[in-house]
Image (cartoon, rainbow, N blue to C red; front, side):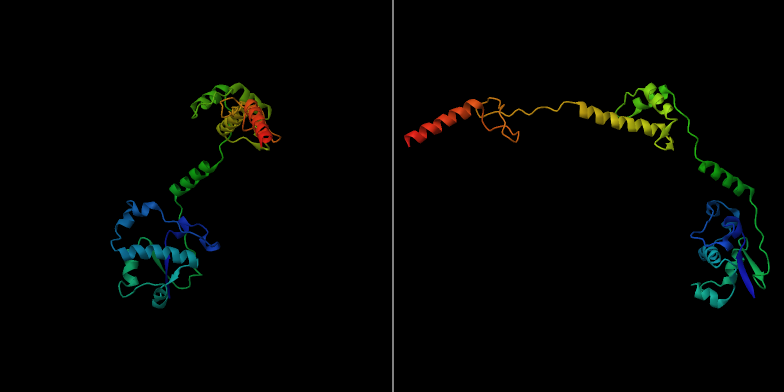
Amino acid sequence: MQYLHVIKLEKYHPGYKDRTLQWAKIHFRMVQGDPDCEIIKNEIDWARLIKFILLELEAQKPLPDLKEYWQKKGFDLKKRPILLTVQALHNFIEVIHGDVGMPTLPRHVDKEEDKEKEEDKERKKPLSFIAPSAKEVKKYGQSLDPPFDIDGEAFCSFYASKGWMVGKNKMKDWRAAVCTWRRRHVGEVAKASPKPRVVVKCACGTPITMRNANGVPEKQCYECRNKNHKENQAGSVHG
């Protein structure tokens, strides 16, 4: 019995036989000028290459080259036999004869891939924090919209006294801390600003200074209230 194996599967998915994968890695270079890929002219073969990768990753072993297996997996063998696909994909697929548990498939070493992995590790490393100078802090504050006239010396002195800690954690981004200072500054200014007093006027135009027990201004000034009170008393006498 023979099996089909994706040649570079171990290269792009190291250890795929020992773990369950949630995704498959297909290198961009496969469709961006790879000489081996340019010889694949049939779209069916292209689609089958992708499916071979997914099926072998899922099975964690080479795929049995059986008609029943391919039909079960949705391959239309009448449209294009597997043999023709294997011939077209000879740079990607190898045929293994015998028990798939016996041969040890070679692991391909790619120096360029190893270099990419090292670069990825370097990019993922957290950047070490560098304390800013008072000049840098002030310059950044002025670059904000609207500009924030922050005291750089006070900012640096405050956090330096705390070991550049924010709570229990080491500061990661001093610019974010400047933005926090600005929000607090805006809030403090708003609290300190006196609220404009609303002046309520009587119908006669006189400002009303008298308020009821709830602190709400009366509807009339003292003179109008006194005048209305006298008129009501006179009306009661005449009545």
